[in-house]
Length: 238
Ligand SMILES: C[S@@+](CC[C@H](N)C(=O)[O-])C[C@H]1O[C@@H](n2cnc3c(N)ncnc32)[C@H](O)[C@@H]1O
Image (cartoon, rainbow, N blue to C red; front, side, top):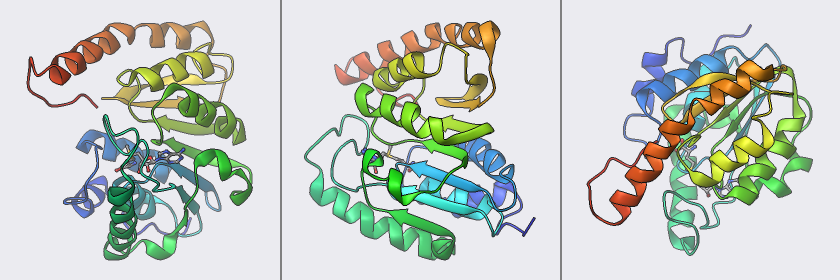
């Protein structure tokens, strides 16, 4: 397979040093590994790019003939924790910074940005998808639509990574509704809130593994409530 720009996760982590975003080091490593597993000529779809932290990891880890589509409207909605609407000015700045960050990391010509809401971008991407990386709107409705409608387009045996799983209430409810039955997706575990799935029937074992995450989810919700009420300090759980 044509060589990726970075051959180690260390190099990818160093490249995103200073790029704003919420991916921890362990999550960068997980994303790097999943990207490296995409076969030659494959396709990756990112939903939610923000300033490019995860996009750069994809661009560095993917083989040079892998297509990477980065979908983000940069419209000022669902920008970050508790930033649901009204962030148009910040989002305009995010767009400029996103493009500059890709350029600086040397991956601008490896990524095809699509400035649309994910629900409007289906026509911009061909089938099938080998790796779907979901980190867009975290409210239940759009998160469920991403998992259901984009998840449908992942090839059998393909991968799905979801950020803020078992952490954001909207994303977690969407996971439960769209994936947890184990009929289509096998749950492979998580690094912090980054959950990994493979598109093969996971069965009861997969459903039980996800059920076992509920106490961690409850702890995260309690933490967020206490932080919001200023009864404890961060970090916000990811
Ligand atoms: C949590 S940030 C993404 C972080 C990014 N993956 C990173 O590693 O830094 C969420 C992003 O989702 C974008 N977004 C919001 N609604 C969206 C939608 N319907 N489709 C795609 N992206 C969306 C926001 O503009 C924002 O940039």
